[in-house]
Image (cartoon, rainbow, N blue to C red):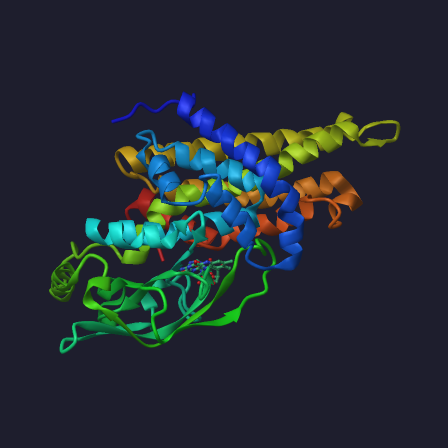
Amino acid sequence: MADFSLSLNEDQLQIKDWIHQFAVDVMRPNAHEWDEREEFPWPIVQEAAKNGLYGLDFLMSAMADPTGLTMPVAIEEMFWGDAGLGMAIMGSGLAAAGISGNGTPEQMMEWVPQCYGTPDDVKLGAFCVSEPDAGSDVSSLRTRAVYDEATDEWVINGTKAWITNGGIANIHVVVAAVDPELKGRGQASFVIPPNTKGLSMGQKYKKHGIKASHTSEVVLEDVRVPGRCLLGGKEKLDAKIARAREGGHSAGAQPAMKTFEATRPAVGAQALGVARAAYEYALDYAKERVAFGRPIIMNQSIAFKLANMATEIDASRLLIWRASWLSKNCGFKNAEGSMSKYKASETAVRVTEEAIQILGGYGYTREYPVERWHRDAKIHTIFEGTSEIQQLVIARAISGLRIE
Ligand SMILES: Cc1cc2nc3c(=O)[nH]c(=O)nc-3n(C[C@H](O)[C@H](O)[C@H](O)COP(=O)(O)OP(=O)(O)OC[C@H]3O[C@@H](n4cnc5c(N)ncnc54)[C@H](O)[C@@H]3O)c2cc1C
């Protein structure tokens, strides 16, 4: 087990500096343009791939860190650069996590690299769980996968909603109901290989924030995939379903929940990056902006806002680092992953709002980045489990009761 330490090692410091520089040189100067264009920023993702920041190698080296801290440190810097562009760069990671969390080693080797492509031919991955009528309630998915024994194929039908990289990805990982009566315990994850007939993009959503990240519906009409596309394999799924039918409690976690549990501290780190960006900007501004003959920071009401922002940001980082270390070394004990995501995302919303307040009228205009950061912060309280769902997970963990 790696020691938990608050000092980053040489490798981590190097990665932090490297990504910070990328954020300063590439992300910050382009953030406003891609927010306004509301299109997927292919040139930025290609640039990230050329720099070694987008792709399997980066993912593998960050994941190999025994302390678990490299990933949140890297993500914080990237989202400090910009959350929309950051999400465009990080979005494929959710599909990769879905494959790694549920697939066999062979399936990981085959499909994860295809979520990224190469620096000269960049590809994307998408993780498709949510549906128009099932977001928080992932146990109620209507997308159905039926096994066709004659051809050893799975036939998938349904509509997925709010999917990051949906319809523009090379690899779609789809969670579907195999036995709907069993709710979450009757679900499985499937890889939909590139150019599979029957998968199409539905509406592309116009969003409040992270506009450079592509979000759309994914429509699945009689999509046929070979048996080897079932993550984890049929034998394992059959055994899990048989246990669930017998009413056993060891039927295994829902595939979507397994992925989200692992990625929550990373989502917290995204929110943290946005919060820190806004705090730093507001701090500098408050020292320079003069009203009533003195810098506005000389007023306690402004200085105390900044003191609270700094404290909440540091508290969030500590929770994220603890959760990341636990996740890597011994697993969560008391929903620490949910705590970190909940705290950091709520902090990001509050801190970015306070930053607008500190900048006054200027903060409310698109000439300054804080209004964008405020819009970008909000998504973190919604996706990968809303704040209410995180509270539910924490309440159940601390009480041992099935709080509803
Ligand atoms: C930009 C964006 C990107 C996304 N990317 C993806 C993606 O790549 N893949 C994917 O699968 N999904 C994705 N999502 C979907 C996202 O995960 C869902 O929107 C989210 O889980 C909430 O589901 P919902 O929208 O159906 O809200 P609902 O579940 O309808 O919730 C509505 C409100 O009710 C509250 N609520 C619901 N149930 C309870 C309860 N039991 N107790 C207390 N409060 C409750 C919620 O907290 C929320 O405030 C994305 C969403 C957005 C907006």
